[in-house]
Image (cartoon, rainbow, N blue to C red; front, side):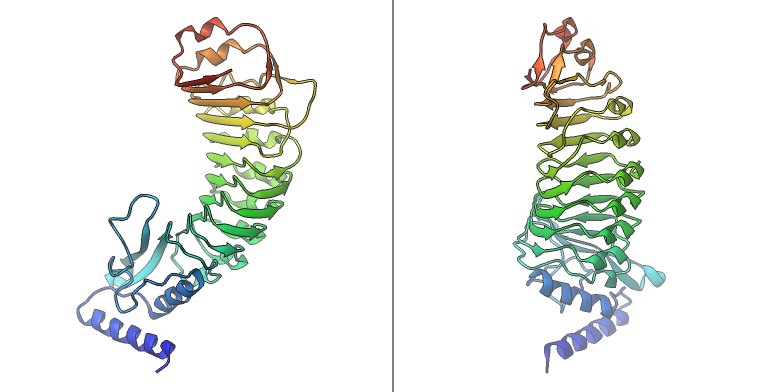
Length: 331
């Protein structure tokens, strides 16, 4: 008997057995989809004779260490608690060496895919744009190529983290359509070009990181539209200064890190950060800043880390620093 027929027979038997005892079951087409993506990812320890939604037999490991989670999660409340649907696939640090499955749309209720820190390669499938995912995390793999414009069609997307890969090309302006996006992590890739003007629409952003890339142009003024932003990391991104004055309106910021800006030989004044009173981390290293350190920097009562090194600052350290207790300081 072929593997596909054997698998189908197992699914039917499993479904009948589950029905007999009144348990909720995962539809056969979703079990088949799990089998297909296991082959694509290189996942070899899923046991298809057990219930994928049962939290056992390789489908979940409640004792997994943080960062090595290994679980398929389901919602089993459909049709009066008789039907399950896959909602989350988390396979972190599982030594997977395949590629990304294009057919995640076969899971109509899938909200999360997290394949962080594996050895996966290839590109992000355009087909993912047809899903309704909330969280996509593929940090620390070997992915290449550009971000498909179709990702901008995932209207439900809240977190999109693709750090520490080998992605390249310009960012598609279609990402600006992600009206619910809160976290966009692009650090340590090979992205080029300018940040799309359409990014001004990402007004729900809370965490934006683009360090260690090859972007061009100045830090765009559009960041002043991100009034919910709490963390901004632009370190070694390829972008040039000055730091736009509109940053002054980002009063929810707690972590601001900008460094290694290209450009203006004459230097730029210290950015107007007086309204960022919740800052805990402030890094403005090698930003070609001239002049004195403003008094308001010493008035940030929550500040724990300050790095103003490799600029062209002069004058004395302000008296406002006398009551500041920093864990880390470099200026």
